[in-house]
Structures are given as C-alpha cells and as structure tokens.
Length: 78
Image 1 (cartoon, helix red, strand yellow):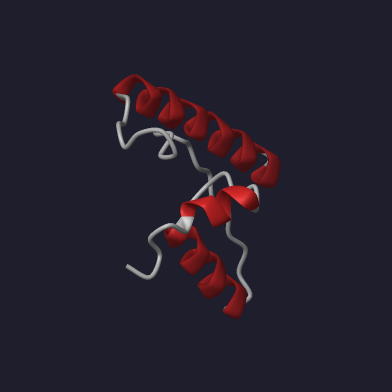
Image 2 (cartoon, one colour; image 1 turned 135 degrees about the vertical axis):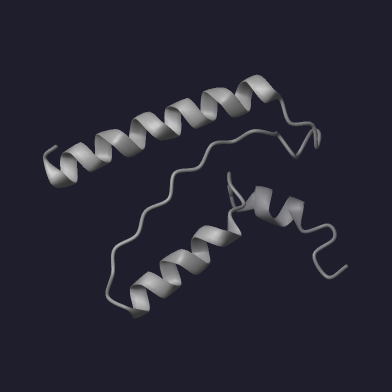
C-alpha cells in the first residue's frame, strides 16, 4: 500500500523501466569489485495495461540475445 499512487511520481521523473533484480546484481557486483550488465526488454506498457504480448516477448528476447552476443564479442574479441 505504501507504493500505491507512486506511478505518477516515477512518470514525472521520466523513469522508463522498473527493474529490481538488476539493482541487486549491480550492488553485489560493486561490493565485490566485479562488473555487471543488464539488458531489459519492455513487454508491457503498465501505464496503460497489465497485458503482456507474446510476440513482444519473443522480439525482446531476440534483441537481448543479439545485444548480449555483440557485447561478448566486443569484450572478449570472439
């Protein structure tokens, strides 16, 4: 209940993504001196609806995979 109505506040701050798990990953890696990355795909426009479109999930997965592979090639020269 404490976060009810907070969407307007986030929208006013121009927040485009809500991703809690990555924050934990970044915090843990930072404290251990490790590097971390996160690739996100938007699968719902929660300001309009909770509906998730399966085709958007598939396209998001494909795009995230392409970005991840490109990053690995850049970092490791593979």
